[in-house]
Length: 282
Ligand code: HEC
Ligand code: HEC
Image 1 (cartoon, rainbow, N blue to C red):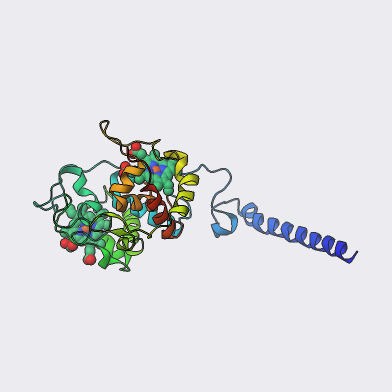
Image 2: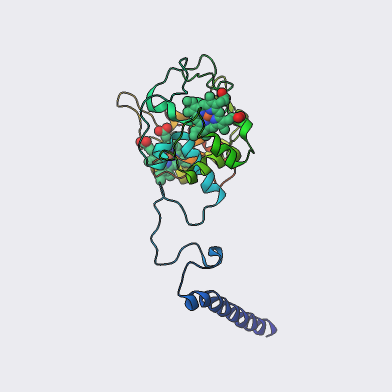
């Protein structure tokens, strides 16, 4: 009996609390007739009537750290596809003679500093077709975002506000300051392969089967970005360029409607790349 009474009491208390909450939350909106007041976290990020910003190039109302670091990582990868702006013309003036690349590719951060953020001291060392002699950016980890953003408009970088505006520069600077990972912990920089045991293949398989397979297929062969003669699947790229795939899993592919795992522990991304490297390559 006592048990039943308690339940009713608790039920009534919950109802009162819920009603109070409803009234409390809706009252300011009703009173002001303005949906833009107050802390959005309390009433939710979006009003029911507003449209949804596009996932690929849009900006959420209330960006969390994970979103900011992921978009920053996409700008680092390829800023014009990430930001949907005109691609740059010609070779970057600071791209050295010794480098083997030319044209728009030389404007990508990764072309000078690498997917491992180590520049000439990492995978893009002397002997690599991506060698430039330029150093890495790990020294900028933890540096103030404004300082990094200012540096990206200097004579080494020459990024104008038409290319990357100030808000967007804040995102890539945040990525440089707080989003870099220690790639050498997971990938052998000399052989450019996953370090055996660095990733948990079973957990990676689980993530792949439930997340990546939705678009890439269980065997990773549903999407092919090869050039016609040769295929390029997730499996191909993960076994040849695991550092690049790790970056894309953490930030997603610029301009593509692809998810990313930035909101989860880095280890999950490492696991999925380790598994992807076991998938068919052609
Ligand atoms: C054409 C080559 C090139 C491109 C592209 C490039 N950088 Fe640099 N970056 C340099 C050079 C040269 C330096 C000077 C220091 C050096 O040689 O390492 C530098 C230095 C830096 C530093 C300072 C490193 C430190 O420890 O002080 C950061 C941070 C940086 N770049 C970030 C970026 C980001 C982010 C992008 C893309 C938005 C980018 N860079 C694109 C050439 C490039
Ligand atoms: C919602 C769909 C979707 C999901 C889920 C998805 N991807 Fe993708 N992914 C894409 C699309 C679209 C592309 C662009 C393909 C192209 O360029 O032809 C892409 C591209 C890639 C690329 C290649 C980028 C390049 O270098 O050209 C890799 C690697 C990749 N995805 C890995 C993954 C992994 C690993 C997962 C799971 C963590 C995943 N993707 C989940 C849609 C998705």
